[in-house]
Image (cartoon, rainbow, N blue to C red; front, side, top):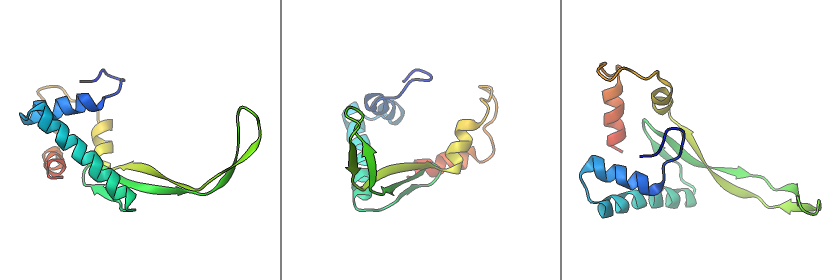
Length: 121
């Protein structure tokens, strides 16, 4: 698992899926790759992806603009482009921002429903 304040790599995510699901690392890697590929393909088609209890992925359009080459200072035209954007859902925000509960404390109300909904995706 990644260190606190660090970042989780794809390999660590595959390891976690394998550990939690009792699947092989190879099967877990196929699952993780398929999820990422599906999100990328849907965005490429211009679709929005909504994962209840987690958030949504969508594209934002950036208009063409005038930029500046930092090395030479010359003005350059920056073409329009689409950029992926993730908007976290309310449940994800709440889970991230809640105060850490003691280990033996009962889960907060609605936690089971949020876990069930996220597992159903």
